[in-house]
Image (cartoon, rainbow, N blue to C red; front, side, top):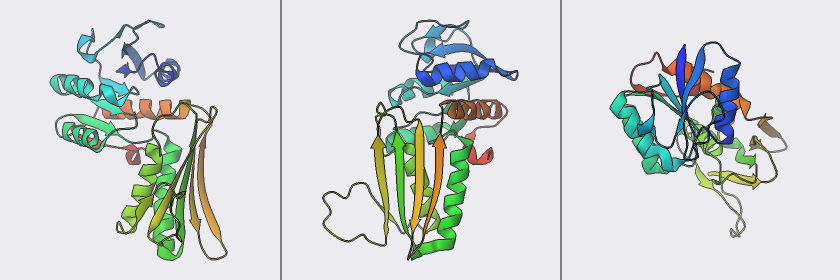
Length: 249
């Protein structure tokens, strides 16, 4: 049994994680962390990791980048593994996460969906086969409440493709002010925000007279919740290090 604390427990993802855990027998929620401490289930919710009444086996974080420092401080001081599932981190914060992984088990990815992480592998394979013969564009769509753009997942896809191509590409996020032809070295990144779109990502390889599109669409937040729970159960038994979804695909 894996005892889990949810950071961001009163958010939409936090409540989705709790609902998913309720359907499982290999884990349970023992506590929550949220600036809003209203209790909605049979576990306590506190406003900071330092106030947790029990030490969990793993913390799943679906909160906000602003919570990172206090979360890592707690995990490092107690040796608690953490699944970092929020997005919108700065480069400096990502480095803090990597530094923490030298002392504790850390599971960090821009997207907890198994399907998305399979999409990453397919995009890398396509890039290795198509090389520089095809132009590459990434289009991501999310609900109108999402703050960061482009999405962390879009960046993850672009980085994976670029690494496959020896980091020969640069990213172009907006073309409305670019009065010039597209360069071969570009990966175009496009963000759409509207309605209640959970998450859609298209990787487009556009060549001469043919187009290949790799797509993933999430119908509910539960796909991300289940991925984070699987990561937490996996992480409980691991040594200090940085882990990601490629180990579970």
